[in-house]
Length: 187
Ligand SMILES: [Zn+2]
Picture 1 (cartoon, protein in one colour):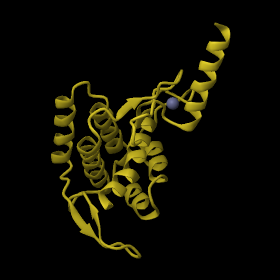
Picture 2 (cartoon, helix red, strand yellow; picture 1 turned 30 degrees about the vertical axis):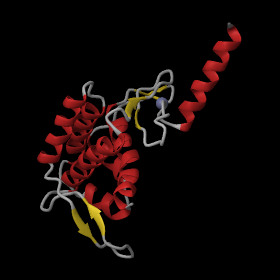
Picture 3 (tube, protein in one colour; picture 1 turned 90 degrees about the vertical axis):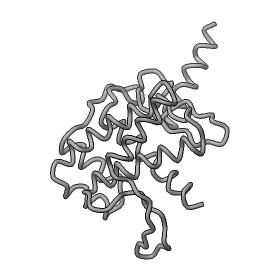
Picture 4 (cartoon, protein in one colour; picture 1 turned 180 degrees about the vertical axis):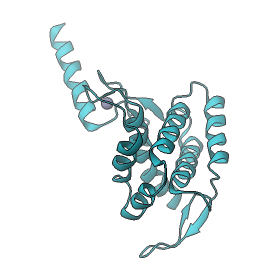
């Protein structure tokens, strides 16, 4: 299903933007949250060539991404479903998200969610806000979390069938397993 494919593609990008811009600890190491040009360049490299180039061309891309990352983190980690829904709805409105079919080179028509007229930064806001709405609708409100491993505050989006995800990455899953094993051996 195309919507599911779209969400599957967006979810890791959403988490990565939030983590690049807001996490002070990742994978057991202290990190500096990125901002400005550093954030724009690093995140643009995660997008496709065309979207990455379009993002780098946006004036003040770093500040816009910082704002977007903060809004996304608050929506992801909202304590109450009603608060979460209202944050996502307000992002959808503010970024002018709007579904429309696009035919890219070499691809059949597929659905995008960024409204027309904005910059690539607004386009990302619209895409990401809609992806969160589709995840809440399709999977429920409890699919967002902060990594459970020691010294990691990266967020994750859990699209597993059985809602089993607890860690941001394979590396943190392995770290947590090792820590649990050592803890059991001590007792
Ligand atoms: Zn982690």
